[in-house]
Image 1 (cartoon, helix red, strand yellow):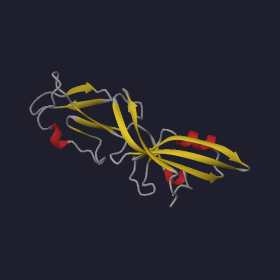
Image 2 (tube, helix red, strand yellow):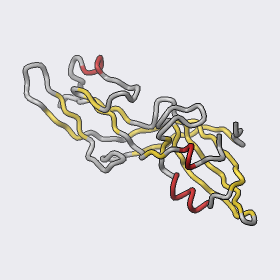
Image 3 (cartoon, one colour):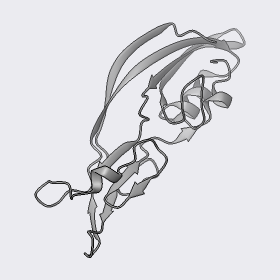
Image 4 (cartoon, rainbow, N blue to C red):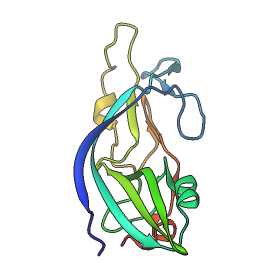
Length: 165
């Protein structure tokens, strides 16, 4: 397995009204016996993460790798990390003859890089029963009064970063 040359920590802050597919972030809630209500939610979020840095001598060009990976999460298990838990933050490199020395900055979050939001009443409170039904393991995208928003598109790191295993 490729060993990171450095591991550190950081916080990524976002304030986006749209998800990775450019959909407006909304949550719908229907109270028992009531009418459906929909609200737009603010996707302001701070993501604490562990950052791994890998140096790789490879034939894959730095520009090609940066364009294909920066801002993307892993769509499948990569190394030992579950889907959508690794985010490529940056790729930099230099030519080495006919190859490249590429450096990959990968942010890891065990909770995924998704954002979960719940419906709030006008007074800011959460209606009774919503928190009990909130699923945060990525197995569902929404429920009555809550939603999971995918903040970053995904690609298969196994095929895009074949030399970091």
